[in-house]
Length: 204
Image 1 (cartoon, helix red, strand yellow):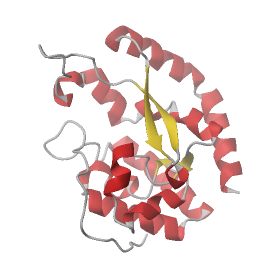
Image 2 (cartoon, helix red, strand yellow):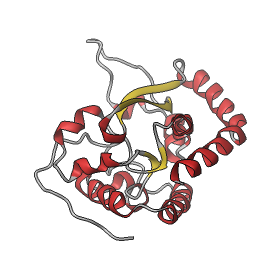
Image 3 (tube, one colour):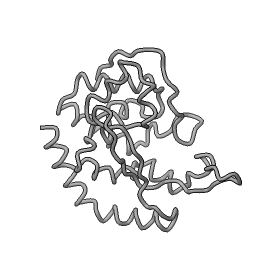
């Protein structure tokens, strides 16, 4: 039922929003250059890797040593706008159609984080990752990694179609309000360095 729901909704959105996708793609090309789509390998269901798609939001500016400049420099005002309203996430509907993602589930993070999770935190990979999730509607990037993983694992243990629909509704509300986009004092979000504490559960 969840997969059928994901596929039906994502196909409708992908086709219905295609004019907006094309407009964003043109603007990304003009303002940020190529490539238009940012691609990155992320861990999916049971840690199996897949290629995640997003609209590009940062420039490729580098220093004299050839290293990328800090995110807060490369993240332009246009890129901030895309992130503020989650417009950069739209290409992930294709990931949902392909079966890499679900509409709702723990966000797919970086591959290098896999070895840093506690046993409890790794349970977040027992379900297909999502475009949005329980952690995203309960703080997003404004909460700690440990809090995010606690919420992710709670979702894994309590998932249902009703909960998914509730999260999608709350996501739309959060996007309009632009809540929790960045961690305080950072342009995006700090890297996860590992945690010694195990996690329990939350409640809706």
